[in-house]
Image (cartoon, rainbow over all chains, first blue to last red; front, side, top):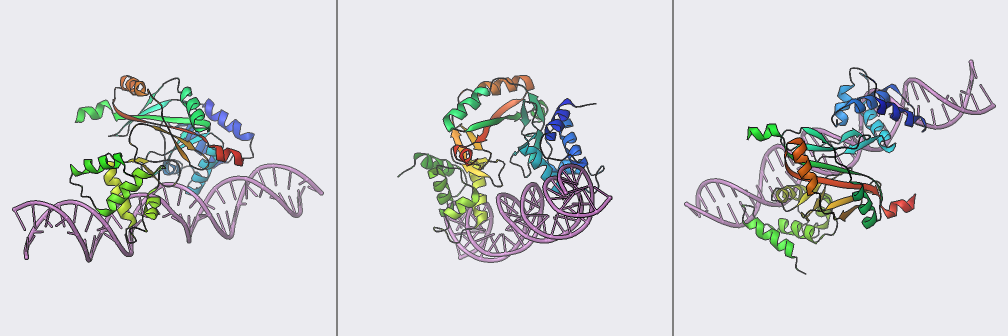
Length: 143
Length: 143
DNA sequence: TCTTACATAATAATGGTTATAAACAGTATA
DNA sequence: TATACTGTTTATAACCATTATTATGTAAGA
């Protein structure tokens, strides 16, 4: 199945001097097809069949490249390692504190938050991030 | 100058089996007097005159103790080290993508977000987190 | 005083991330 | 083509925030 957002991302890289390589394509493809927010190591492991010789540094380097190109967002949840998210779809997540399950969740109209922040802090605002934490139905039953 | 919130925090620790030590008092005092959101290392360095023999581990251990007691919040952002915030009352942060500067930012009425998430995901919602990202005035001038 | 539980300090270990250097590959220009 | 140039990958070492370990110290209770 084709992924339109991936195509768009690849296209937008062509306008920069960032070269497309097999490794980069695979990392991007994995990220855009991925439902969750993988860590760099998870990406690395997911691609080691396809690229047995790929270095971890390559994953990190390219994630940074994509981040700087605005295609990918880095999220830190307080556990040891960063997670990465293809930055295209604007939705939020509800996260279970117990089992880590992530449920998508649409909520409109936080543009005003950005506008207000821009005003009170004199920042040029680029984006925002929001998550809701709680206990999922399954974990609630266990207790 | 006295700090009412610090007193309150010290008081609330008495009801637990957490012992008050000079190091703990100093860490708490520094955090509550601090305008910014220091890292563990910044706290460590700020107190090394007063406690030349204090271990970094002591700072980390006690920050965890305070966190578990609900007195301190740990903020994990993209940069390498965690930051700690004594202001546990609900506020949000605007973060500079370039230099990491953090500015506090009050915004009312995201309770409805929790309510909606609770409804659509059937979670029992406990909390939420939001941050706004952009470029601070200083970094904007540099470019 | 003896015992127990909690704290600190010093140090080592862990592990995610980044820096370095050498080999490699695509691109442009002559 | 040949050559130079720039960007990329790989492998490895280094870095650094955080945690684990262990020995020592200290407060509180019986």
